[in-house]
Length: 324
Ligand code: NCD
Image: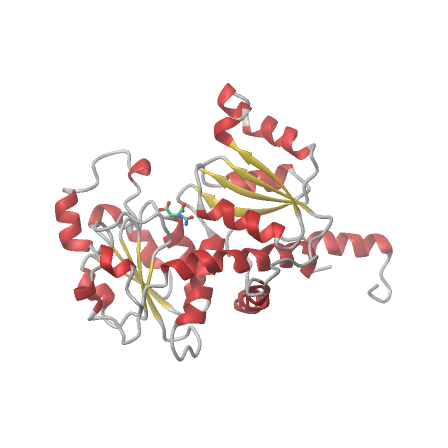
């Protein structure tokens, strides 16, 4: 107990320390680096023959996916079970939401099951924040609209730190993100995270898919020319064209898009020696990324997926136990 404080004040202090992961607002560089260090420990657990520790025994984690997902949901569930937490899963497709139940009523029903933490993906920006206001449980954003996808950015940064040869910090490093930046929560969260860590981010795409306001943040530049974006980059991330979020024809033609924006082996020659190729998935081979590049030795796309588990283990652990 803090000397001089009352038990109630203690509880209040604990409550105010209660922390969600909705985006990187309020997170410091040191918070993130501590999380990446915890991830190293979790990665060691995942190297063992028996990939399970009792760290979150007795906790229940609810995965609430109102939007499709493969990698993210599986890796959160793996991360929870590897730490002995119980998992309840909700997928909007097979639920009463499709019968017209509101988000609030759905949450009320789920909340009666008493989870300690919810992992939320929703097509509407801000939905996880809304849920955080309605429940006493902690909330982790697993992607809201085009707004944020913080755990993806964390696993991207972690993968870069683990795999870039001779890594000596994020300062002075350059991440190039090429593709449909406009509809990408992955791009927005990576901009927030990498600039927080002291790196530079270059965003590249056709005029219609590259919102000018993203270039206003410190450490961020925009370009429509892919060769310029890749010049000297330490990591190059290709993004899928998110057709499901496109309301009008934003592209000239797919053929022209490929010709002008596809990340290829040839174009990678302009990047820094040892530059890594990244992609959050799902990949549309030979559209945003040359197929052969996805399988090149300096592609870390599979490592990104694998690292999703220890990164999410570290997040669940830090939020549920770390501050107690
Ligand atoms: C992304 C997403 O859903 O935001 N995928 C992911 O989580 N790994 C990117 C995408 O859908 O293109």
